[in-house]
Each structure stands twice: as C-alpha cells, then as structure tokens.
Length: 79
Image (tube, rainbow, N blue to C red; front, side, top):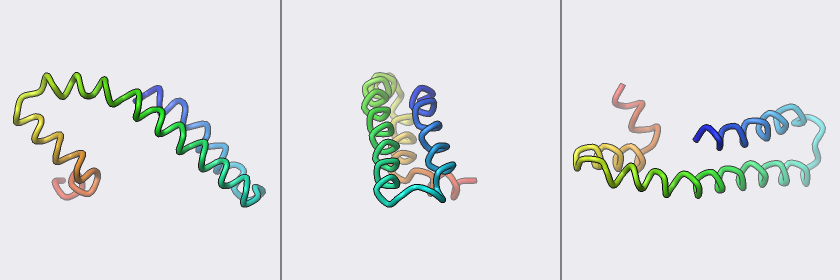
C-alpha cells in the first residue's frame, strides 16, 4: 500500500500542478496514468491481502468483508 501511494502521489501532484494549462488530451493521459498505477497497486496488494485474510478469524473476515463492501461510507457511520 505504501509503494502504491509512493507511485500515485507524484502523479496526482503533477496533475494538480498542471490543471490550468493541460489540454483535454493531457488530462485524459494524466488520469490514465493514475488509474493504471492504482490498478497495478491493487494487483500487487491482492495476493498479499489474500494471505492475511486466510489467517483471520471468522469474525475478522466478516469485519473485513463489511469494510471492503461498504468502504468509507460504513467507517464514517460507525464513528
């Protein structure tokens, strides 16, 4: 996850820094770079998380399932 953030963060910063001067094509290319980096990160993270998930108790798995299913919406409601 940290590696993914290290990859994506500069792309997001560059996108923000160039927001006022980039063309529509540049915008799409920038968005594609971020999307590709995110997808690559998820592909690397999934097998590692699967190993962790397999070691969890049933209660932990249920909690993880709810969190991943509902994402931030659920975590905001529970606070």
